[in-house]
Length: 457
Image (tube, rainbow, N blue to C red):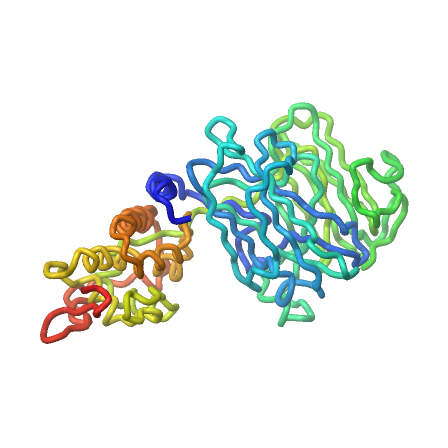
C-alpha cells in the first residue's frame, strides 16, 4: 500500500469526509447486539449474509468486530468464517470481481480488525463506489455453531440490500455466561431504518420463536427466496426456546403497523404494507437474549450512523502534558527508529520529539521528527478518543523507521490533516488545561539540550 497514489488520496480525504462511522448493527461492543452467521442451533441458518457498501472519495476503511468466531460473543464456532469483498456497481450482489478476501482466523477476538482500501473504478457509479461484502463459511465441518460480529465502514455506508436475508442476536446484561457475553446494555429492542420504497413494503420475519404461534393465513409453505435448509412450512410452530413477549412494528408515513404474533420456530411469516411510500422505521420489542432473529425486507436496511470521534492536533498533545501522559498509558508504539527503541513511548521522549529544534539535525532526522510529532498525536487520538483514520497507522510507523524522506513528508501532511479533522468534544478525563512550560520541562535532555534520541539526529 505504500505508493504515492494512496498518499494523495489520503490528503484529499482526511479533513473532508470523516463525518460519520457507519456500522451494522452498531459499532458499540457493549450494546450486546450482533449480526451473525449460524449453522444449526434450531435456526434458519446454514447460509451466508451479504452487505452493501457505498463508498465515496478515494479510500475507505472496512472494519469487522469480533470476526474470529471463537472466544467472546461466539457460540462453539470451530469452522472458519470468510469475508469476501466484491465490486458491485450494479447493486445486484455481483461476485465476479473480487477486491479482497479475509478469514476469521486472522481476526482478533472481541476487538476490531481493519482493512484500508482504495476505491476501484470497477466498483464506480458516478461519484460513488459500490461493493458487495459476502460473509459465509470457509469450512463446514461442524453443525452447531454461530459467529457473531459487527461491520463498520469509515468513508462510506453499510446496509443490508433489499430482498436479502440477514440475522441478528442480542445478549442480556444478566446472561448466564458473563465471561463470554458481557458487558451488555441490550434491552430486548432493535430499531432499523429502512430505505425508500415506491410501491409498498413487505417485511418477512423468520424464527422469532414466539411462544404461542398463530397460523398466518396470508402465506403457505416456505418463501421461494429462502435458502436455509432448516425452514419449516408456515404453520403453528411454538418457539424453541419460547419468547413470550416478542413483537414488531413498522412506522411509515406517520402510521404504525404492528405484528403482535410473529413467526414461531424455523418458519417465515409476513407483514405487508401496500400503501408504504418513502422511508420506514422497523422496531422489534421483547426479543429475548440468545434468540437469533431472521429478517428479509423489500427495502434496504441501513446500519447505524454515529459521529466520528474527535481529534486533537499535535500542538494540543505537545502543550497538554497531563492529557499526553494519560494517553501514553494506553500504549503509544512508534516501533524502532533506526537503532532507537520507541515501542513503548514515555513522556520524556514524546515531549522531546515535540519540543526539539531541528536545526543541526540531518535531513532524515528532521523528517523523522516532523513525522513522529504527528504520529504521536494520531495514535493518541485513536487510543484516547477512538478516532478512525482511513489509513493504516502501521504503514506510518514503518515509514518512520525508513529512509524515504519524501514518503515521510507525505505521511506528515496526511497525519496533520487527520489530527485536525474534528475539533469536537473530547472525553472529560483529557479536558485539561494547557501547560506548555511544564510540558517542555518534561522533555529529555542531553548536556542541557532537548534530546529526542539517536534515531532522530
